[in-house]
Length: 222
Image 1 (tube, rainbow, N blue to C red):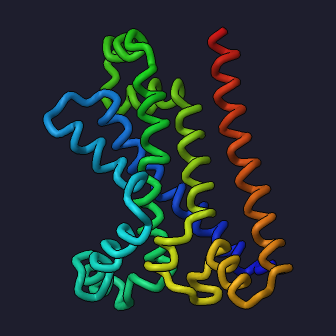
Image 2 (image 1 turned 180 degrees about the horizontal axis):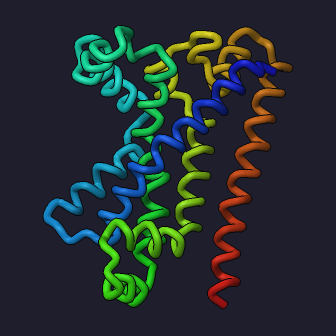
């Protein structure tokens, strides 16, 4: 098994979830509580990664993150190095493609928070951010945990965008899913079987955790 690729995938998944969480919370709260024009367009934009082919997403990321793209030029000006074919580029792409996996469960959970809790906090002088942090998010913690878990699992299994944005550089951008592809191409079926089995078991455990959260919510409601 390619442990180097597995470790890189785990590091990518953890980094993506940690950096994505604040953005996902902000967007989910907008969708759950916001009343503004363009809300439907924002929701559609967040959902786009679910329906667009990875090659299309990867192409646009390459255009934006390349040396001639806006994000690429900004990154080069800040760091002096390119964004594509780097771990940082993988993180940026992973954050964008995981938005719907994190935002949708959290927005649904926030939308289910009973308004009288928020109204009571408002009467006590709590502002919007305080109500979100102290009332809404603690009550919607299962949605937050579900979004983080789904984003982690999806990052671990992502192939198309990771290959187009990061390439296949051992120790730098070769993720576990790309390693399986390389092992099959090299006819290393034993290595591919081990790496694929690790991915399968990890994905099952993560999804089982999400299912347990759903069942726990039903039992608590009962």
